[in-house]
Image 1 (tube, rainbow, N blue to C red):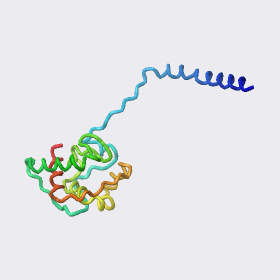
Image 2: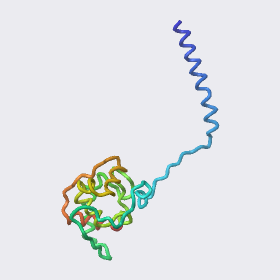
Image 3: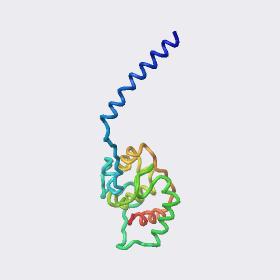
Image 4: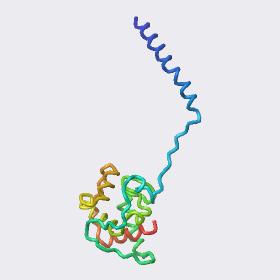
Length: 161
């Protein structure tokens, strides 16, 4: 009896699986290609609006970039970025947080610095920060307790990225 059930089950399995070959033959030539989004346009494509007028919520009300990048300040910012920020952000690809290449094409310098200095309040009150939180699966940006000088260095470093 057990052998008969086994043979019937095996036969049913073989008949059921036999049709897959024909289906796979019909799909021959089908190829799935996924393209990575460009980092500069990634957030706009993900549904988070670009807003260069929003300064965010926090202590930074105005940031004035010089025409030329301050190389000394940018070097300090790079060190800070590579020590702290790199855990969640890359320059050219989406990670736990957004890619930061071209960030000033999407955000104001004040917004960037306020997000660095005041992420707790930004995530509660700023509409862009809220949208990013939702887009990145509620991965909260932690307050790293950086000084304004450290945040300014990171902001300067991100200028040419």
